[in-house]
Length: 135
Image (tube, rainbow, N blue to C red):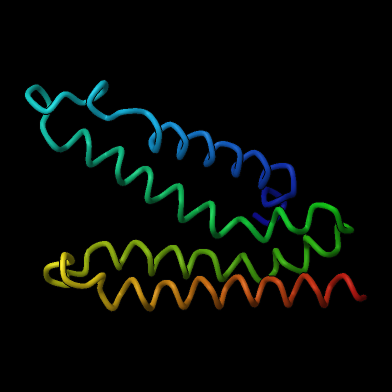
């Protein structure tokens, strides 16, 4: 399984994520999903695609930082990312199903915790990359 998680495949996945996110971010949903024909379901699909791809993008940023370094640096980060990324992604998916009340007045405690976990992931990735470059 780890053989599929290479620099090339990570680059291609990141490129696909950026393309999907860009399409769902900047293309007007009204052209694709007219409200009087399809309803909110079509717009929800594009909104969820935008949220999903932005999460994957944030989780793959450290992989891009390993590109100028030796292969061993990517492999050191990959050892961490193989278990950290699925855990963070599962928590992200679980957070979508938690009802926090009216988000008009607050953005929610779950989003705050996920933000802290994402920052901890980025910091841990930077530390692992930094230590691997020193070896």
